[in-house]
Every structure is written in C-alpha cells, then in structure tokens.
Image (cartoon, rainbow, N blue to C red; front, side, top):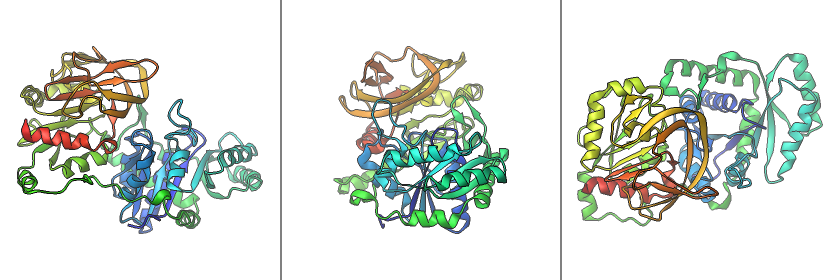
Length: 461
C-alpha cells in the first residue's frame, strides 16, 4: 500500500477537552461521505477503539510507542490503514503528556511526529475567550516538529462567544476548523475505569456515535479537515506495513500438517472481557491457531476442541455475580488449566482465575483472592520474565501497562510471571503448569514470538 495515506491526529491540551467526541464524530462523518476510514488511538486505551469501530465499520487499533517501541508505530499504522482513504488518530491525555519520566515517549505529539501527521487541537472553550489564543499559541509553538494544522473549539456557549474566540485566534495564526456547541446527548457514561465499553451498551452507543457525527457535520469544515489530512505526505522513515507473519518463517511440509490440525485457541469475549488488541488474534492466527471467541457470561462450555485459552482484560468486577453463577464454565476452565493446557490471562483474566472475586467464587485455578479497591493502579511497566512459561522464555523483556482498581492477594505466586523493573522492583503474577496470569497488559506485536510460543504449546500440550 502507499505510505502516504491521508491522516489526522486529534489532540487536546488536556483530558476531558472532547477528543473522543471529535475524533469519533469525524470518523463517522468521513465514513458517511463514503470514505473508508482507518481508526486509531494513541496509547493503551481499549475502550475508545470500540466506539471508533462503530463509527467506521473497521477494527479500532492502538498506536503505543512505549508498549511497542517507536519503530513499530509507523508499520502498525500502515497495517491498520491498508485499503483506506483516510485515517483519524485520537490522541491521549494532553498533546505533550507521555510516559512518566520518559520525556515525550508515547505522547500524542511523539506519535504525530512518528507518523508525520498534522495535529488538530480540540480546545474546551467553555470558560475562556481571548485567553484561547495564548493557549493555542503555546501548544502550536512548543515543539517546532509538531504541526498544529488547526483548532476545533468545543463547548462554545453562543454566537457571541464564538465571535470572541475567532477574533482572538486570528492573532495565533492557527485556523479554526470547527466550532461545537454544548451537546449533552453525545456524552457517554463513565465509571471507575473510564467510559462504559460499547459491548455493554450497544444500542445507546450507536445513538451516541450518530450524535457525535451529527455534531461534527454541523460544526466542522470537513473539506478543510480532509485537505489537511491529504497534505500529510509519506510516513517518515520509509515504513512498510507490519505483518503478523514471521519474516523468517518459511512453510514446510510439517507446517502444512500442523495447519490441518490447527489448535483451537478460545478467547474470552462479551461484555465482561472487552480488552484485547486486534493484533493478538492476528498473531495467533498467523501462528496457525483456530481462534474462537466465547462469552463467559453466557456460554456454559468452552469451544469444542479448545487446546488453549486467552482471557484478556475487561470488567469482571461488574459482572462478578453472573460469572460466578456460570458454574459449568468455571469448572471447564479449571479442568482445562488443571490438565496443563496453555492459559494466558491479563488483568480481568487474572481475577477470573482466582478463587474468588469480592467473595464470589471464580474458577479457582490460582490460590489467590481478588477484591475491589479504592486505589487506582495505573501506569506503564518495564518487565522481564522470571522463568519459562507458555508465553515467554526466562529473561524475555516486555513492556506492559497496568490499569485497575482491584487487588489480588497474594500479588504473585511461587513462580511469578514478571519481575517489574524500576525504582521499586517487585515480582508480579503467576506461572503454574500451563498458566501465565498477570495484571500487565502487553502488546504482542512487540514480541511476536509470544504468540508463536503459545500456539506451539497448544499443539504439544
């Protein structure tokens, strides 16, 4: 594909400015024009990509320079944007906010520079008028390598308010590409870890995305925004699309035989387990697995022939009663793990494998209990595999992300999954027989051998 796919990065001075409303509405508005839109999200966020997928009809993908490394941002972007007319990238936090203590790393500005993409700054103008010019000027001039191509004013109160804002911004030299009025109908409900995922509110989510699109269509200059995207040029560095296939792997007759007996890898899905990167399924499939989703809230059996199990993140604490009530599936998971089958669990998956969650019985695979906590645990982690497991050989270094309001006691087993590096080194997670369970969310594209190793263990266990 061409490395010059038209693209925009939607950023803001801070969280809560309206990035998700504008980015999702813009994706839907471009799609309504008949464009094939590639949706992306900066950082480890799993929830916004669900709304992006509703807006575009394509899988929402993440671009994380910390989890995957800066060198993979361009290739992963091009992989997701294949066959598309335009790409919209929603930023994270404030434009220049990145991994703590790591400078610009993983910030929206960093990703915009890696992509060579123009930035559209979304500004919450609800409590300012002339000061907006100083704010925009500061963000536009802070880093000369970041091209702020325009601003969209959000939560504008009236025609007079808009007039004052436009007059002020003429001095900043940054064009106004849109003005959005206050519109409660586009708000999406939140709870302890952010927005409520699409899978939990399908009908309402569809209505919310439609409202976002209507607001953007009414208040933004789509022609100017598309022209800005088309002026982006080629992605820097001569990037080529990432591929889930191993670049050094050449099929053999043995591989062809393995393909005929592709092991079934069951992946937890449904409202309780919505956190998964699209590349994980692609990597498992490329490694020869038959990937089959199932819903632990409703399915009483694992998919037929399950040889391995992947349980990602989500909200088991919200659905603890329903998960606990599904005794047949809990028993099936325990029996699968007890038989030594490969099981990879992250965060919500870790909780599901515990003895109990907030006093309610879970699968009992791990001799640990889980409970809700008032404390939010959040941040990037630099980790190394303590020993060999179904996912990684001892010494494998991966970067992860923690985001939860739960506590597991004990926090690690006799064989921990990871040693977390940093000012306060610690061990974390559990490895026992074929089980690898941890709070860390990892992006397997950074270490494709993880998926190949897991599938190979599914074949041989």
